[in-house]
Length: 263
Image (spheres, helix red, strand yellow):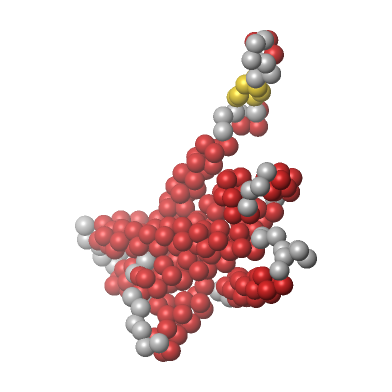
């Protein structure tokens, strides 16, 4: 397909997509890989920090342990506040060029992109996880401790499974945000979707047509990911119709509950 100066807007859109679809595809692939990997690593960071920041410390705790906990908690709080309080585009510039300047290490742009998205997501997920843990009734902590379970056992077997289910919508939202925010990584040369779109636009100087295609690709990515994650959220919520067994010997004691909010 060829175009001329008299070609219509839609002809230009079709021409650009036909000519540069490998660039768009490669950019979308890099965007998804970085955002997905960064979200998973950030989620793990958030779980670790969230658990550490909710460790119970009271007057019966040894003084050395209390001091150590306060130091660790202060450092983690600094990490959270710094990465939540500064834009990712600035973090990308500082980390990528700072590592090269201070340590004389040239990071690959792809690895740098994953690292930046991961630690940025980890700062947000740390507070999301902490909120999810604190949302669990304190009686469950007390019940677990009363039967001799340690804090780690309580978290692993009782609290975290419930907290993760509660924070799944927020985690899904972080993934969608990361898909869009990877566009800022073009400042350090990451060949994600926005970077590839700039390259395609520069060849023809048809910026509106190119970025209209880019906008559509971002929308398809986020819309699809949102629907997939919502499907998993509904699976974790359990069935909308279930039976409560009031008696093992009297069938009449059983009755069904229907959650009409799901219909």
